[in-house]
View (spheres, rainbow, N blue to C red):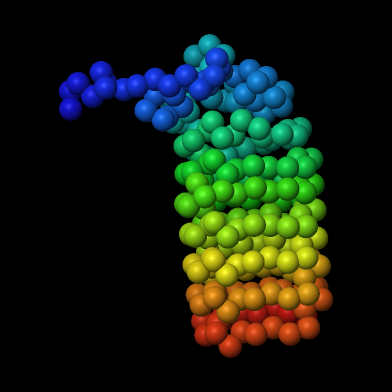
Length: 219
């Protein structure tokens, strides 16, 4: 429709953020939206092409892959919810404490390892998230029940006392080695091929339903 642009509507969310048709159209690179100075500077240096202090729609469209980006010194990724075209996000060896990706609807791969995390939050918007690696953190709980597309989950070397993967029917690769688990139920994970549950306190493990299982580590 040649007149489609005249039908766009702008919604004022607050004084800092404008949305066009429920898409973020301009995000000021300020302390309110991105309070972490290092994260804000990285976004400014790498993606604010016209140096106007904002992430405009054409710039946001270019932020799709944080795989291999050096985030040294970042302590908070608050504001990541505005980066709505982000599909891949990898960080390691940071001091984050918490990470919320619940509004990153296009996110497909997440790796946040050795980052001192005590909280990792997903949400119903994460329907495209297929791979999660959150190994080497301080997580005592992890809710992945809403991740319907999840086929790979690595949560090694945390402090998990339990984890429910019964809703993750696509799960094929599951590693929860070295946690504080006393039981694990994989009876609903019929596509499971690789399972690593060693270095826990699990006394019994029922894999009778996992006919596709190729590799099992439970010592």
